[in-house]
Image (cartoon, rainbow, N blue to C red; front, side):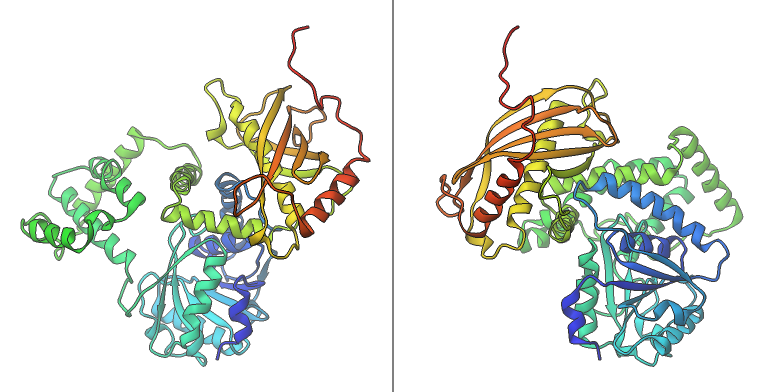
Length: 491
């Protein structure tokens, strides 16, 4: 039986990984970058090197994916046995090669060695969980948690229970994966390949028939997909545009299986001639549309661009990203920096760059806004009854541009409270490239406190007021910036 206390924890403190290949390495990266310790068992000689490569890619991608500070990175420990991997962890994630015998043996060993109530999951792409849990001593703690490559970027994880899986296992697993930025999808019934892989297999089967019958080359098939419905489905899914049941019924009656357009049940003969043909087409595609090396970086950058676009609309995978960032922001501790300016760290993403190759003016406004959010977090920290409180809104901003920032620059914003009263908050921001002595820009802002219910200016109250006024008192001891209060004038 799963421990009730575990259900409330959501984000585990440590996990055990069985297998450090492409999928296992992706799991390691996702958990480590969410501040979770990882114990990895993989007998391969290059396991650590393989995982470190994936982790380097994930660090690079996460720095572009979110501007919210990540928690301190978890510790990666390479262990010598399954028992060592599962000792003292909250979750075991098996990601061994797709062999039923290998997986059954690993999962049985993990079940014998793990503490009672430890959740054990398999990353299998298609084996039914009832088969995988057949040899386990604690099958009630087991389920399938099937991710997609790259695991640290793609949010979907398919959860599927076996015949002997306990009712709490799905709930606990969903909470864990959601806490590290994923979208858990429960598969209602055991089925080979689950949901996404079955859909992917059908599309792949038809694509190979088109190539086999010389209807299209691989490049033409890729173009047909990525320039049409793939964009639509990435944005809104397959059936959101059906306009309800009536629209779906009309679409099925009008289109479904009316024409022999596909060969869903047949597959082409995978003989050497066909494999040689599609291999040559793949070479031609790579030559005609080369991607920069390493390919994983370009893949991740394209995924980041799509996820950012969807996040801006608060929809689908973009909502998952936004929810994960909100959790990161809530968990991120503020450094003990009361007596000095509050520090905000950011990296300049490529979409903040103008046509001249340096940071656009809006970049500096965004940096000031992010730094203001740091002040807001500081004065709200440990405050009760925040729902009935208000918020600060900017009414005036002055920017001074002193240098240039570029894509990839890590930037520190140091914020000083110049003044505060019941309704107003006066801030000064110094924006520096990390490690530089001279500022790249400075910003000065005046904010007004607005009541959450009336939406009108109102005095700040309670613990927030106490925290703000204490911060203003401490910052009053700091030297006043030379540029504070400067006006635009002709000399």
